[in-house]
Figure (cartoon, rainbow, N blue to C red):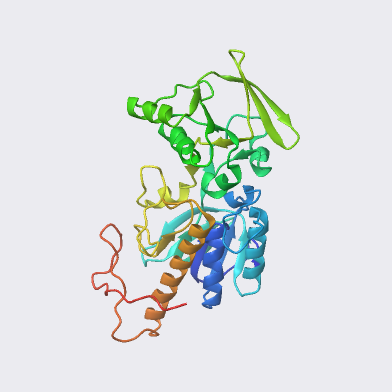
Length: 340
């Protein structure tokens, strides 16, 4: 069911923050576990910018990000649970170990939280960059769609190890790659300069002065020195910014890149708080985000089953890792997850 920011709610088993593939998957699992939960969705999932993914299993003709999210929302809608539009502005860890989440003019309270807030790509300084990504004129994920670029002529926008790393990844699909730094220094070590030359990757450090769009593609870049290059597609390798404001506010342990540290059960450094999807360091893929959402939801369900006396008396729950906070002194040991 949908709810409004001012609608009062009972205490929940879990609040899922973020309505992308990871958050939606966690919500679907929690719904099917018959748990009391709310999903808070700002409607800004990175997946919505995917024009069509051809490597997501189960879709032989590929699937667009918006279509996939709509399918998942429809699936969630077949079950009980609250779906809230909007954002969570703060999360407070209460003395009793539960959480209070500020939503609109009200507050949600829950025993568990799953942060699935994702990341935001750093878009290249090109005209209408977000629309270009949505239309597939600028690509963000070579793992997702490099197969469709076999023998194509490509430009990679980026610099340093990040830019060259993406260009080298694409090199196994095509030999025609130009690394464009948009006027910034290439910033590579001598060893990586040699690696780039060995791979036959060209580099242009001159500023871009003009971009030509032909039909449904960006077809030509003009540079300040008068040079022009034509190509089939652009990849942006400018990185991303994690949506980690809530995580930082809570004092969660973060990686150097700003994403959330989790264990094998998607638990964060605060007991009862989980994270899933691109906000967790790892492979930014739809399937990975979904799997992490599943893992988090199952672990929460098993914790609640233990509290309800619905686990074997001889079973022992997983002891939290050393970096976790609010760890009970008598934390029991691990039990295998039930088969799906």
